[in-house]
Length: 373
Ligand SMILES: Nc1ncnc2c1ncn2[C@@H]1O[C@H](COP(=O)(O)OP(=O)(O)O)[C@@H](O)[C@H]1O
Ligand SMILES: [Mg+2]
Image 1 (cartoon, protein in one colour):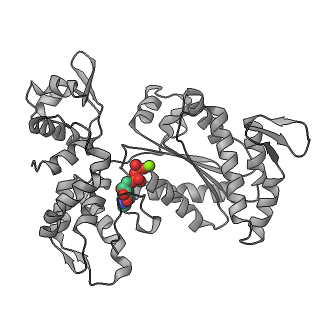
Image 2 (cartoon, helix red, strand yellow; image 1 turned 30 degrees about the horizontal axis):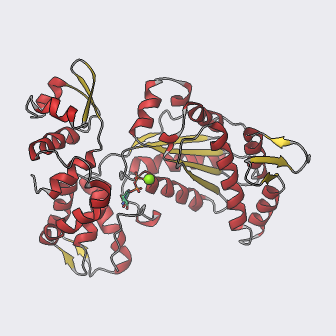
Image 3 (tube, protein in one colour; image 1 turned 180 degrees about the vertical axis):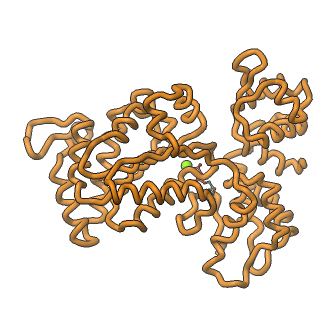
């Protein structure tokens, strides 16, 4: 069985690298245990950079710390405001209680407390308080009542994935959650694309941005050591017979630029039992490109090789906002700046100022597919 799968978030036991995030999470978990205080983490990055994997890792660390941790994950699939966000969290808490109720007396009690909070009037999105029948609960009261039902837990981890789908009031709700003063401490973990980060930092120093101060993580490309760990982690349980030759690790790093999704595609395509060599990685390129195709092949189909090379240079700079002079310093020739604007790779935001609009993985994918180095 091939242990690499680019199609799904990596399971926590194979999660590689991101040491700073892990250390920070451990600190916050310890703080929650000692002081029963809330804290928040913000993970931002392009698609395929490992945000969902990181949310799951944080949940797993919290569970390792204390198995009675209550955790809910709310993946947003459409635009969300305050009401939708709070009721989704409340629903997920109910579901968590339901799923755990037969796993011991602690969770059985949690489930019965949760299920005494409200009954929802089917299909209307309205919840009615069980304690005072006839009284409907607004989403904030419903959320608070649900959280209060979890008061015996050491911690409630609330993960919100793809949070760029929050509207402005929805973003404001993050502050309400982070600053809630309930009996149970909350660890709020928010993951979203670069546009979420841009919106938060535009409000620079805003109250919402402040809840994440010191706890913001850019899920950028893996270092070579992180790539090595990501390649090795799934093999740990397989004994010493299968391993990656150092030259193969370096080749994966060079071809993927450390982009987690592409590392996984290349690993999956090169994998076999025994020693995996640089040649195996080369031979796997075509397969890796095919795996990434459904997601990436329709992006920049009409770009020339030189456009892609220019985009790779910009992507490698790891900057999302650049001035003309900075772009030229990267070795991009002047005519390629307006060309990249026409392709939608760059957007001119002011005279001589650009922002990167397309994910770096698109550049790296095309470089692989077209064999550009
Ligand atoms: N820390 C990590 N260790 C190993 N593989 C990772 C890691 N982070 C991401 N990946 C791989 O990258 C791919 C994309 O990860 P995912 O968490 O789905 O990204 P996102 O949520 O940002 O789109 C997955 O195939 C996953 O296996
Ligand atoms: Mg994701």
